Length: 240
Image (cartoon, rainbow, N blue to C red):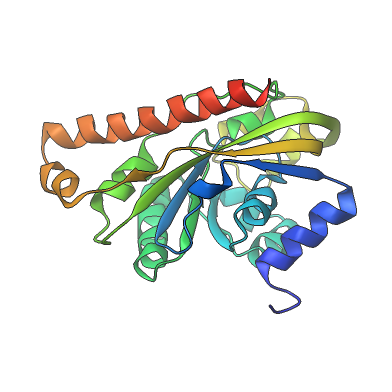
């Protein structure tokens, strides 16, 4: 494995920070792609954590601003993440980039809560509402044997520091309303954390055949709810 591979960078970062990682339901992790990994999101460590837990490079979709901020954009690139476009291009940018990666049987990662839990302090066992974009992608992309894998990140011990003023980020992405408020961007560093792998959801040819008209929205909602419910249940399990 190359010294600068995303997986090795992730492992070294967690080791340097002293993060202790525990994995549950490891037998549910697929050995090969294409896989769409869906997870809750509170920390800049989430992508490295999931790569380390699944022992695979995962190509994560990340917020537009992460590709604009100096230093951060270099880190994002090294980890193999792909920043999304501006709001008017975001959905198309996500679909095109993620579809290409899945078609080459890679692992693609998404955080359906978006940027909000990253910039607002949230409790370790909370999970916000999921956006449905990943579900539409899974049902639309022409890839055989696609698996959607929900994974919960359940923090046991962590430290939260103030990283930088939120308004500073508006210089790099003025289109994001979250950056127009006062306050500081929190930086959550996990000390001890559980990664709980959920039940996989296979995308069947029948699902794609029914993905049209009003039924398309219904199928996307069903898949989104499956992942949300699974992650919520795992977070509750991870607290016991």
